Length: 360
Image (cartoon, rainbow, N blue to C red; front, side):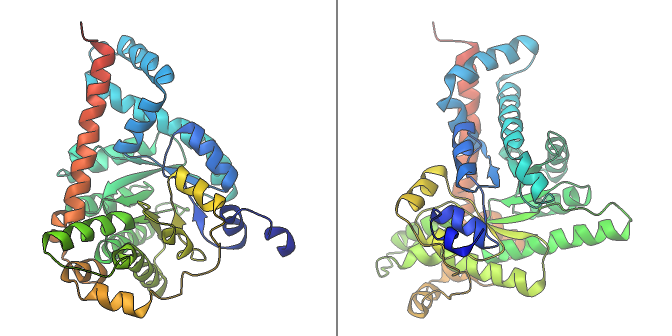
């Protein structure tokens, strides 16, 4: 396609055509995903919150399907039935992404499915479920939390041939630790003569959730910052992690998730990374013609970064050695997000219970 034609494309499609940046849709909802693919999306993600929302938004599909599943599996409880629906939702989304998977040689076209958050303390259980989920479709990529337990599980699952997406991840030290673990897994596979292929590993930083946490932390500590400064926190972490991955030659890519503002799109375009906004953010980016310019290497404004670095909690998330592996799961953003994932699991159980046992 000639550059004169590219100028007429919507920003998302233009970025997909002109740069190495991959657009993924932060939802496995089939209606949203189909429209996102029209915008240039070549991947999608699912987690307990997303799955719960998608199932709630399509009661005409999922309520009868849950009743069918209950009839097919008369001994299953609410959790087993709910997770079967999540798997079916993910398989359907994966099918929509197969063309992108084939076209990219497996680098994109991936559907992320998240391991059960209730397994977060059990590495062996996380590995077993990751292997199970990886067999749902060829283009499945499995999300495991970036905690000490989860990173050990990621390395082992990746060694066994599972494509990995780190989740519950908000910081540079988490991303770098995961990137190193995935390198070890790939090297172990090579040393043991296991088949080499494109796994499409990605390492998420939930930038908007880092912003959320720092806004709460500054309020709790009675610290005032200039308006707008904290909206750059996640971006600063994403840009730094991306630079480290490029310098070290890690074979996994950074993935930006948890959108809170349009900068989390415009400031990352141009990099060999994945940007994964919710569909409504994609629509607004296009509607407002937010530029698709190469800005990944443009630094965070120095005065903003200086103010951010005056905050000890931001430095923990920004410096490569800002946290130890053991501290990852106690970071405020991690605790709050894990609680949200666990609550979504409980709500999914309740939704299934309402289908199986309607109130009298």
